[in-house]
Image (tube, rainbow, N blue to C red):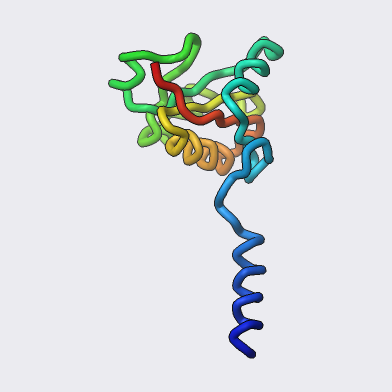
Length: 123
């Protein structure tokens, strides 16, 4: 196999298993959306949950109204207990979007079906 053929094969395989989430696209059971879209969706739904995956200290300093705090490090242990309905609409945020992306991936693997990550929140 030539170097070019090998490169094309690697690119094709990697392209199918990309880890990055494109905004607005569904990826591995969750969607990554803009903050404004998340807030608009919250107006439409009457029964949804907001999950703040920042540390307990960050949460105590400020958080969105109605948000439940499940720090990313505790997500696997606390999520199913605090959010038993796998079909609930769940919005996930952190400070910059890094932890909330990871949380969305984890929750998707746990079986949650309606997860919307919207990145960071700072006050």
